[in-house]
Image (cartoon, rainbow, N blue to C red):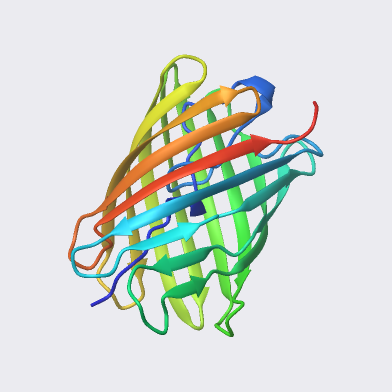
Length: 240
């Protein structure tokens, strides 16, 4: 039976952003990435952990989900991800799995005061002799006062196998430094039935350059990971 490990720290929706200070826009949490780039010549560091629970498969814990974003200009950033480690709570030959090294860039632009989008091409290289992965992702967001809407469409290819993805989310700002969201996303591997999920999360800016978040995603079919619990941290480095 096919199982998909949905690790919430791989991508995030910056909806009704809780980070208005320091021009700080995290890509965490949520399924879609944000539509703002890192500030010019300043890095953003994002990391997190995810716990999966499933009645048919062993539980897993993944960390640190480390992503570096570096702003090259007003609309462009470089991106790199450090391999995370997934531990399986079941003894066996594959009880620890190392993730891929990722490289890419984001181009982000504002369509209006309320609408923006981003485009992210990236590549991931396996450290365990697996095939490389190429990925293209388009993200969008629209704000209307305290309410925000966002989503993405993405496609990736690994060893000749193609996978499509899409998401939509709605968020609500809770003051200047916090927001909550609900989301739905779909993963569609080649020659496999679509895998639907729903989820929710919260992001809080606890300091001018620090955001913390937590999230919960639920698989809706027997072929999906039943429950994924995530938590993370985003840090804007340097002075403006």
